[in-house]
Every structure is written in C-alpha cells, then in structure tokens.
Amino acid sequence: MAKSEIKRPDSLTEILIAPCGMDCGLCSGYLRAKKNCPGCNGGDADKPSYCITCRIAHCEELAASGTRFCGTCGQFPCKRLKQLDKRYRGKYGMSMIENLGIIREIGLDGFIEREKTRWTCPECGRLICVHKPCCLACGYVWNKAQGDAKEGNHAG
Image 1 (tube, rainbow, N blue to C red):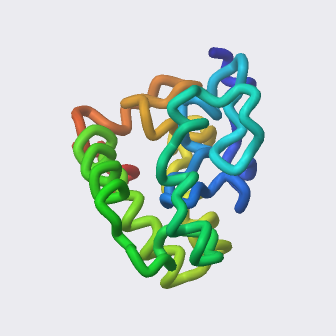
Image 2 (cartoon, rainbow, N blue to C red):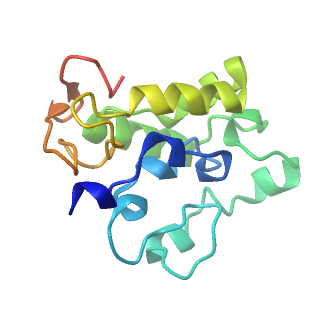
C-alpha cells in the first residue's frame, strides 16, 4: 500500500470508537486501500460479516442501558467483552477494557487525542494498524511479537 493511502492520525474521530472500546480507526479493515470498513458505528456496506453480526455492538443490555459504551453498562465487563479483551491483549497487545476505563477517566475527546499520539508511527507519521506488527506505510516494526511492543510501547 502506498504511503499516501495510509490515513493520518487526524482521521481518528469519535465515530470510530466502537461500543467495546475498539478504536476502529486502527483496524486493518478501516486502514485497507480498497473496500474500507467504516467502523462499527458506520453503515454495513463494506463491513466484514463478523462485524455486522457482532454480539457486543448489538448487545441488548447496552441498548437497554441507553449508553454508547460498554464501560458505562451495568454488566461491565461482561463475559463477551472479557473474551474479546483477552484475545486482543494476547494477540495485539491492546485492551478494550483499558480503553473504556480511559474514556471514563479522561473523556472521549481526551481518549482520541491519546490514541492519535499512541498509534502514530514515529518514523512516518501515519497511523499504525493494531492488527499488523509493522507500519503499513513505512514498515517500522512496532510489535516484534504478540503483545511485545517495540520501544515507545504503542501496544500498552
């Protein structure tokens, strides 16, 4: 993928933060060159089927609570979120539960600013994909192994 096609940190916005705490702006589906996924809060046209049928995004408890994020739900953290968080911590070195705690602590705007800093490639200034061990634009290796972030600790 050409460097010019990789999104810049200023593309991270409130609409890209999923109910589970995932920053969809860091997802490989959102960052890919063709058929970009619009994120959990966007339309279903280019979303992968597992996102369309996500049980967390369509959670009855969350809908009934009238809140936008799982972190403010009375069932937080539920079994599904714990399972997703465990997988992301182990495989990608990122925690949705931690993200939701940060949103509660410093607010959504503060969280987004933190994400822009945390997930900007120090080599080229483009967004780092949480699902890939290196920057899609320049190849900078930020995650040498599962959950083992390179200096700068982008994954934790």
